[in-house]
Length: 354
Picture 1 (cartoon, rainbow, N blue to C red):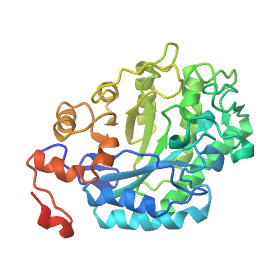
Picture 2 (cartoon, rainbow, N blue to C red):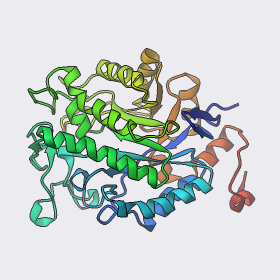
Picture 3 (spheres, helix red, strand yellow):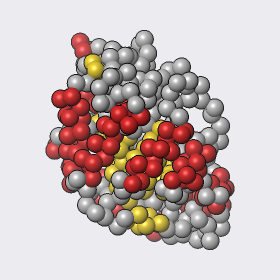
């Protein structure tokens, strides 16, 4: 039996296989609202056999968006369309999940296909915030260093967004603490130059993430899994390291975080990433081996044999795909055929089954 197509139960949720749709920003929302693009985009993955469909990095506040076209959950009005999407996802036998995020100093930027520069306030941008008043790069906005009141707002915003996500029917919550966004900025000494209780030592730099986790958990039902996307490395000298990642994962596991979603990079623009097939999987394997935590892995995973091998080798418990799902929303159906596993197809599609 294929491990890729074996079920796994985490908390009170059973996933029919180990294939996850990784969160992928679509830059197609208006004022944070999901629309029919998101319905078709996300719904197609559920039809295609994914076990968990994770919605893109969703702003916990308007100022926490990467761009003005990001999804949001900072007001109740955002709930209705997401509820409709989640209802459809569940009808296809998949689990709807959401990644909650704050972009920090990487916010107020252009939609990628229009450019990579900051959007100034007079053009619809906004003042960004970060652990320290240091921009990501010359073409990004200069952030304000968060004061203690601002930090408490971030914690509260994560909690409120979680409450809204639950009302919308999401059954998995993921906290985004990687890819150079706000929580990662606090983790990394390359972005965090604070001298108070949120900066300096490892214990201080992880403080905000732990407080966000605690705040989110305070409103999570016991049956709802909590994932945290953590950085494995900054790929830059003097930054966050794989050893830091293992230490953080051990603490998060002790605090009842269910899955470590291991990715890397994004906190500085001078990073040097060794990109290749499944290039981030060794980091997930290290964390799994050293902490015993459940891990997911992502990054240039593109075929069934590759995904199956990761699981067979014990390098991760779940496999996330992004670009491959854009190329083929029905990847799980094809993967099952390649691995000679007989799985259920949507009845509307059965006449095309191999």
